[in-house]
Length: 322
Image 1 (cartoon, rainbow, N blue to C red):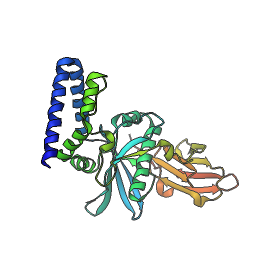
Image 2: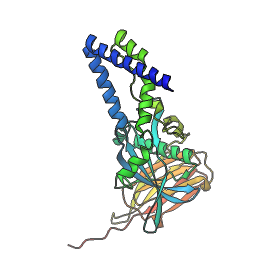
Image 3: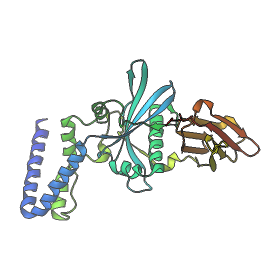
C-alpha cells in the first residue's frame, strides 16, 4: 500500500511538472487546456432544470396516475448525428400523495439542445415524449397509456426532489477524484504538449462513465425504434352546425386499411384532444379546435370501408345577455 502511494505521489509530481512545462513552453496551449477542463467540469456539475410536465397513466402492474417531468440537463450528451440514438436519463419512480390522491412521478432528462429543437416542432416533441414513455416501460416493466396531456405547470413535485433523483450518482468527491486520476495519464499530457497542442486529454469523467453503481445512467433510444410501423392514418375532421350555423358537433372519419374489427381500436378523448391507436399499426393524435363533451362522444366502425367514425358533441357555450 505504501509503495503504491509513493508511486502515485511520484506520478502527481510528474503531472504538475508537465503542466508547468506546458505553461512555460506554450502558454496559449496551457490556457486552452485549463479552459477546456473548467468548461467540462462546469457541465458535469450543472444541475438539471425542468422543461415541461405531462400527465398520463400507468396501466400495469397497477393502475395509477403518472406525471413525467421532462428536464434539460447539460450532463446528457447530444446525439452524434440525426441518425444516432438520442441519449436520455430516467430517474427512479417516486410515489406521492395529495390528500387521498396517490400518483407516481418520474423525472426524465434530455440535453437542452434536444429539447429546444423540439419546442417549436410538435412532431419532434411528441417523438421525445413517446421515447421517454418507451424507456420508462422497458426500464420498470410498466405498461403506460400513450394518451397524455401537457400540464400547465412545468414540474410535479419540488425542483430539489427532481435534482436529487436525477443526480443520484457521482456525488462523492472521492469517486470523482478517482476517475480524474484514471482519465488523465502522463502520456496524454505529454502527447498533447508535444504533438498536438489543440487536442487535449479529458480530465473529468467521460460521458460513458457517468453511471450508476447499479447500471447505466444514460439510456440511448433510437428514434427509429419508436416508430414501430405506427403510421398516421388519413382522416377528415369537420364541424357540423345547425340551421342557424351554430356549431353542434365534430365528426371525425379515420381510414384504417387492413383493420376489420373495432376491438383493435384504442380511442381516448379529452375535452381538447384525441388519440387513436390501432393494433400497433396506426396512431393519430389531434388537438381539437373546439371543446367537446367526452361523456356524449360515440364511435362506430364501418367494416366494409375499414373506417372509424367518431362523433363528438361540442360543450355548450353559455350565451351572454347584453
